[in-house]
Length: 331
Image (tube, rainbow, N blue to C red; front, top):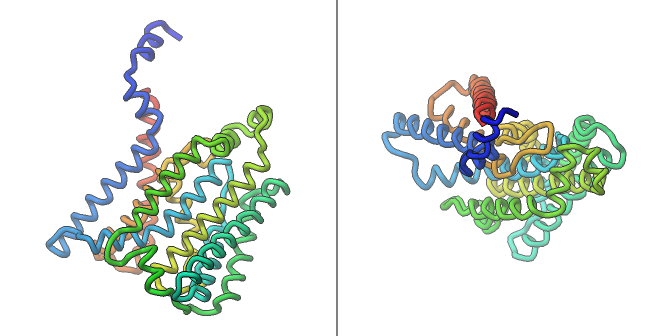
């Protein structure tokens, strides 16, 4: 390395180093800020006012299922895996919640625990097939997606059931964005996870599985736990979805598989593993929701909304990737 370049790197400020290490997070928050600004512009054009508490609450509540699914997907992606069964787990747990949860504290607590355990069990199945069976994650989770969706239809053949109002209020208060507290808790859990032995192992597996194994990391165990945690967070997404809709639908989670991957990519998580943050994935989930809100208030024909939603997401991903490369080169 030339002496001039070495000296320049030594003199590089700490803030520049910090920015370089968190490019993905900075980009997704910039995208989120731009999406919020654009949403406010369209909202003002249509309503002659700025969004208020109702709009904030609705946005947060509608994003919660996707944010939960994206957190779980992040953990799997960090191991160089992919969980396509997320939508099926949300389908099944959402259906279970709508059918079983009754309007009393004991039922709410007990069935919340049961639903999360069901999610963990389904994720464990994926993890054993991928980790112990050494099968391809895409093939395994695509197969279990169909199985979980079939089980969901069995539990709730048609939309119905009911979620008690008190349960809805506890998870997604329709009057205030208290669900942000759950996201704050998830961020704290992620920060603790990132610094734990398990978190270090997950990142090491994604960076170089062979090197991780050579350094004494239990690769199979790490993968099994990663998919199990993905199942738990997907089940949490199912609970939030049921609480938001106040009823169940065994097909309502189908769209969350791809949406969770989009949120992960927008959040700066490397699909080849080893780099990324669940915090970015949460922000990516909000970007996805804001795009839907922007399309609604821009009065685009609903028949074409899916087209424009996909187009905007591609643009956001491409812009983020280009800016990320430019910033890394400047480092």
